[in-house]
Image (cartoon, rainbow, N blue to C red; front, side, top):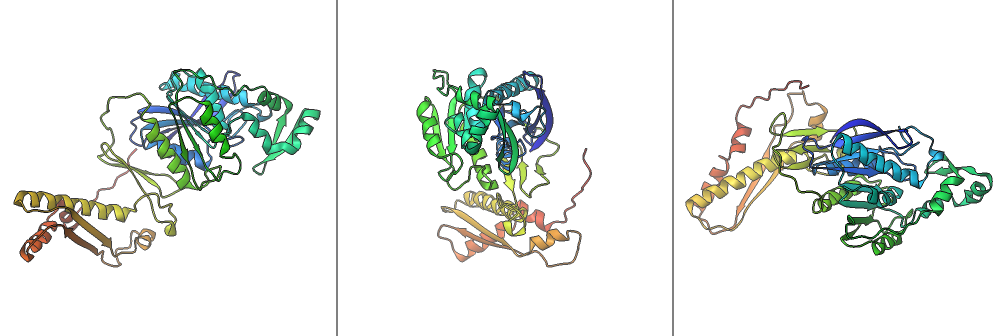
Length: 403
């Protein structure tokens, strides 16, 4: 994921801070806006993980801080639900004027309610996804119930939300109380995806049912079973992002496939906060990672597992070509591989030339009736697959700095 720092102003002239997350390939098929949860910010781990998962599907994501939060200007105490909606609309205008019209809105918690409300004002929106969204903005008052009487009597009060102190003014309550949550149902309603966890202790699962019943089709519901409200676990957030991207593709504009443009035939990117690595080839995207016991998140195969995958697939394809050419009857080809080297120790000291010799065990199984001579020939051909030969040939890797 490649991120650009950008800014835009809302209708009050307040500058809002944002990041535009782009696919590593540089190829953008669609633009989306992400609205974060109440009192959160664009850099919440869940927001970043969801956005990263979406960029792997060629969706650029604009995640921004609402007025008075994160790196955005303004006074949070002067904001309310209506101002959040206006900030989302301002974000859409920014994308429209500087990149492309957004087609997808994604909202987390109160941000989910925000994208539902703002959609009618953004003509280009074709799909909306909500995550743990309340069915009514009034739900937010439950976070500071004990201070509502003080706010009504004195006009404002300091409230503690998520361990942080925020000033809430009476105008916030009045705005929420006056919000009409009856969605405007019409034939051009965007497609809706409602995602919610049955274990959500902040916004109960009944909210998802209420939203679903109020909206027209096309609408879908996916349970985020086992996750908490903030999608604290990276695998939960990445799962949500992948599902949103795959679901949305059915409704977003169809674009002609662009020619992949990269510095080389394969590009990879690893961020500073994890081992999770994006891999992009000509037309395909993948994820690599490290196991949890060496500090990774285990969201994808390790580098050595990818190496074994390359050898295994090349072996299997080579054998298919040979068997087809010989006309031998077979059903399936299986190749199982293991690597006998401690890659975590290797990674700690990559420049140490000493150490164990790498040993790869390759077990080959071809379903069919073969003589011992034929089996030996199959093993011989396996050793001639291109990747096998590359591993055994003198190979020079030229590394250079690329600006």
